[in-house]
Length: 574
Ligand code: WT7
Image 1 (cartoon, rainbow, N blue to C red):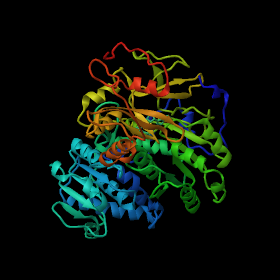
Image 2 (image 1 turned 180 degrees about the vertical axis):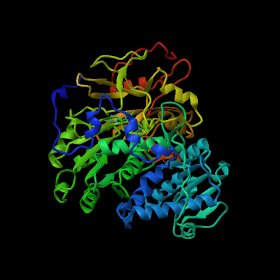
Image 3 (image 1 turned 180 degrees about the horizontal axis):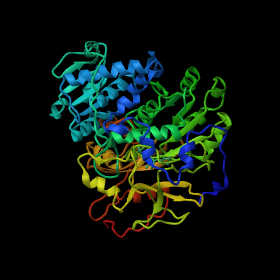
Image 4 (image 1 turned 90 degrees about the vertical axis):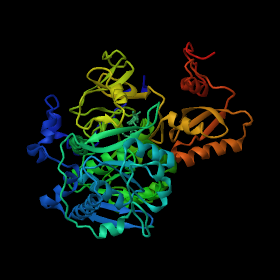
């Protein structure tokens, strides 16, 4: 049990949008949220319209929607400008014949063009597939192939990672760059945009029509395409209000890349549905750069991740003292357990509680949170939002009493729940194997005040710097290396990254362990899959522990690593 449980930080005076919703907690009805949208009457909707055009129609088109900067650019866009640009891109897509339901991927760094591409894709009713720019060719190919993508928006430097001849369904490659080499199926983004009209018909879709596919990792098999629909906007809008606490005039900064769900649900949808000014900072993490961003734009609401906060903590207070961070009103975190120590540090150096939020790619939006009006227990993820019912259940589906550890489960449904795993109905069913519940794969317990405390993953999924990595995907790449016979991959606890990837490897005949070989194997994964999937540590073993059916027993590897008892070995090979 967590010894810190007695500690409660009461709400530091901050206004709370939960207001009306909170007083109706018992009788909470998602319909009351829906009624705030005009499509409630018609049933025809489009998330991109609600996020951008609606504000223009309501006379707010002149407000700043996007503040973008990186090392070479510094630009601002109003809602009206984003409306025109996303209309242009919608027309570019329509000219190629792209239609409602088609999968259109975006594979590029964070720039205004990325956001325009995503909005334009949604406007024509196509389904967006965001890819993180660090993905290498195998990772890109697996995702495009599985989803049957017909188009991809990318940059010249990433082009070589798209294996066109192995992707027969991929017809159009839209390249965002100053000099685009012509070629079959290649569309030059800039010239196509210049020639496109800034007026476009919006494709009005049904609430259950496709919006986005985020690929995410499980413990077995290739990455899963988590499919979300336009209806999710109800949750994005509501949590933007009651969890992000977005209010008139807020300058909001979510540090996540749209390649991950936080970067879309809370880097695009929630802020713009609420009409906030959205800050996007391109480029890599650096403490000075981040504080500079907060100061420069007067950021009021800041959403980041435990790894980042731990790195900022590591960078010390000197750097903080050089910047004026007094604009900050509300700070939030997601992705991994938020250490109580980090919460206390945040209170000391920023004068703000860092609010933990719990959710997953599959849930589409926040579910268990330290929302602003809730007294905070550092180390706890908070409580289920009004409208969400969570419980700890055992494998039979029995709801467990407070303090018992078990499966963290959510009562189905909620507006932003995933609607399928692309091409894999069996995987989808696994999440709902207990009638009436979504099984998250996390283990947790609840205290007597209804606060939830994260304990770990039930499967072998690794969480490194808030990024979810499937051990199977890394193992599959490792065994492609000529020296590797077998590989087992685990998450090893790390003070900054949460976990790092550690690989146990047995070598093929004729190969000898060496430091050079370790470096070469790690690089092989980095180049073939992606930098964040490359093992930071490798250990060679003569033999790996396996079940009789031949599965590598990662829990035994983990027990070795942590010097813990290995537990039940009745299924081991010999
Ligand atoms: C997994 C989901 C959706 C946001 C980004 C991650 C872990 C997420 C917390 C938290 C402890 C957390 C869980 C979850 N996780 N938030 N507040 N405290 N763990 O999305 O890649 O789908 O990963 O991240 O293990 O299952 P994701």
